[in-house]
Length: 344
Image 1: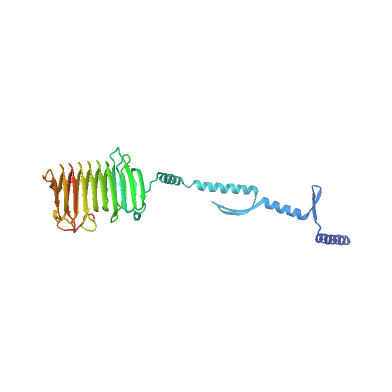
Image 2: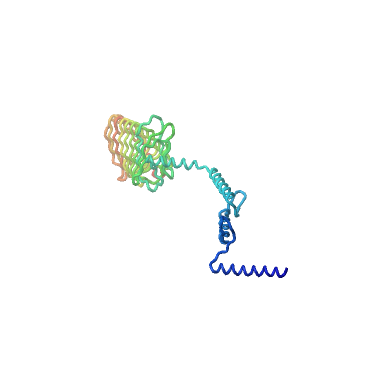
């Protein structure tokens, strides 16, 4: 038995040496036979490795139960991909993205309509507002002068454009909704133009609507203003009405000009400033059948039998009033607020 074992080991040793020698000399070690031919061991090992690579994959993912990782075959690979995709889709479904779509639609409409509302008060020095469009309702346009930014609501905006530092706005009230235009209260704009037309416009706010040059046109409409302030006024009223609770002529000093052209309508205003008496105001007045009253006294028109009146103020710094009146009524009250300005 020992001799048989020794002979087998000898044969295996010789076979191994021949195998190594043959492989070193460029030969092949054949380990399998199929498809009618011998196949080397290296091919078998390669096939096994490729099979493992194609059948098994390393994956890691996270779900509500924590992190998972490991080697998985193709079937489990598909299941993992489906599970991850379903989890992602479910998470996205929980987010409400309708507001994004609504915002994009609104933004596209705004861009398409050419409407541009200024966002910063620093870039606007002039206002050009036109309200002369036809409106079949009794809506009121409210200009609010005490905000930090520009805004418009409750109106059919015909156009809103920015040209340099001038904001031009053309609109009419829409339906029964109140139209509100917010403008920042600053020390003064360079120019303000208001074409009231046939509308009803209210000017409110903690600060005055102020400009170096303020021009107002009224056809058959009505303008009610809490506070106005300007160095130079140019006011035209046809058949409509203008009421100013506080109207200041001259912002940085008592000087300034107030030019008024009045047809058949009416204008009532309280001039605030340094007016201890009527001599603190210079005026040049011209009236037809209407009336011009100063502190309740008719100084021009049929009621006074004087159709042209003028006065030089008590000093060169006095504000100047120039007025032409048809058959309407101009009623001005002087209030001395020089030492304690009201609302300015």
